[in-house]
Length: 197
Image (cartoon, rainbow, N blue to C red; front, side, top):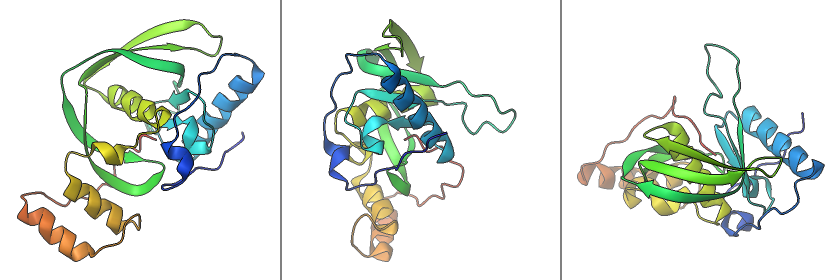
């Protein structure tokens, strides 16, 4: 098990676009396994290469991670993923391993079809709709494009409150809480929310 060092906002690597993987060798398999080990060790359900300082188009997801009923794992490794279909809209809470403790609502497509390559370079397609896998794929693909979930918040005010509470922004938490309440928003506890990546 090789755990990699997570990169936290505002590390510049998180805002860089990644490069396509063209060689499917043992170094790619090792990177994928190290990323999975890192994701599991940090209780995440997804992780993209920039989050461990690597600017390559690879991400790992396991929405069964943290499933207390049994210790099964069902990871998916996505190399060079591209969303080829998307429709609808869903809004839900997201967290990110690069923003510890920060959770807020984010808008995503309700249904997607993603084309990607596996560790052998074989091209595959996967459809996901109305679930955590659908949300996680979009979240991790944003990382591969140098985009972050803070740019897709449903409420900039709620995002700013969460970012300020956890030291990612400067500001007065009480004042922001009052602004959120005045705008009709609620302040939620997020103890059981999955952290995507």
